[in-house]
Amino acid sequence: MKRWQKILLSTVAVAGVFYGMVYVDVIWRARESWLEGEKYWRWADHPKERAAFLEAQLTQNRALLDKKRAASQTTPEDYARDVELLEFSHQQALKESSIKYAYIWYQTAAELFSPPESKWVRLSREKMPLAKERWRAELRAQKIPFEEYMLD
Image (cartoon, rainbow, N blue to C red; front, side, top):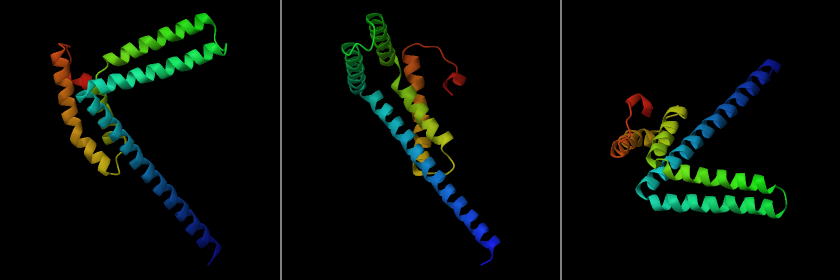
């Protein structure tokens, strides 16, 4: 085999491996986005699960702050500010719409991670309109005014 043929073959092989890695990565990312959408969809149906998750997250983050304070890695003022910010973030997270996040994750999978047209992209495209309609209904029920362009 001539030198130029070896170089060409190596280049094609490297390009093929690179393309394959990108292909697999995009499919995995679509799957992750779809699973996140499913998590938020479930939380929309079971808000107590979401509240328990957020409470556990708050407890874990507060324990980290307490550990830093015990190790004298933070001043009392910084600790108080960090606890206040943590509480505020927790309260804001409790107010957020789970179905809105489900829609956003499905949209992410369908729009950012296709092509290729993987199973996860197809599932996300099927759930997107359903999630959007549930989000609209939730906004109407809360009497929050919105325009259609605000939901995209």
